[in-house]
Length: 409
Ligand code: PLP
Image (cartoon, rainbow, N blue to C red; front, side, top):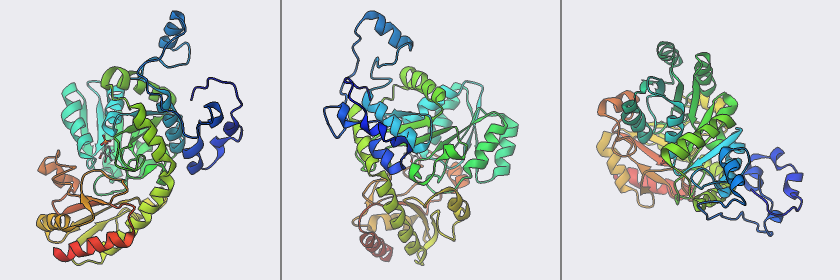
């Protein structure tokens, strides 16, 4: 954050950078002593920034002088947020955007050109899927879908297409499939491609893809980073030159998907409790997953830390805990899935995830409705699938609501 007086920066003298992640999420990059003692960072509610002289303006615009020019590219409240998220993800630099889709689109407009190929996991969030399949293909980008749990299939696709980048989520939306980030990054790099990972479901509390070899990490910060269901935002973290390119081209010139200063402030507030919240989401989700496994009305439960789950071994190596999302397939198919959702009383039916409220939704007709029936079938997103985002209520109350809803099916 820019400082207008010259008092010593006491917090940085204590080297916050070397402290643990929960501490960095609260203190990094800000000292109240430099801001009239304000414990909470100020919100810079401004769209533009005044220069002392025309020369200073020209130098700032040209990048010869550090500073702010216009709010579409950056704002000091946003800068503090970007510093903290980059630190939590273990990347050099961060960029905050107006939504997760803003982060994904700004990144792709920057990295890809007509004639290039991206290799994409076949089961990702529906709007990202639609952007790639319906959007980027219109501009001459080829999208090759692969089941990225199958590393041999990925190697074959990369060898055949020489892509500019690989794109995937782990855990994936909606089935929490676990993808081997280190191996996929190695395959990408072996062919000169970038590995771009959507880390929304895990959050940096549970896994840091850059440490596993990924080049760029993307989040829908609307979810766990914000944590309260009251904002939309996104982030990209990676090498400084790449993130700067995405800011300059993808954000400033192409999408204009800029985060509002007040949203950046709300996200800074959300980050302060991220580690506590994620710990509780994980504990409750594991309890819910085990409970669902015991119901005869449930055919299959997907949760990264369940012994019965295909990705459990990899999840244990790659993640600190399983996250807050539990997916299941109802034995009675689509009718039973919809009946379960409608019978829930405390738990609301809503898309999105990572909020304090437990949410439930039907991926085939909601978050993944942008897939064709055939694409959904290939991706394993059946009509019987129900996705829970386990919230922060008392876990016994969550279980009681699910139990009475299962009884009603
Ligand atoms: N990535 C994942 C895994 C998501 O689940 C979502 C939204 O649900 C997005 C990206 C898009 O983020 P946003 O809704 O903030 O644009």
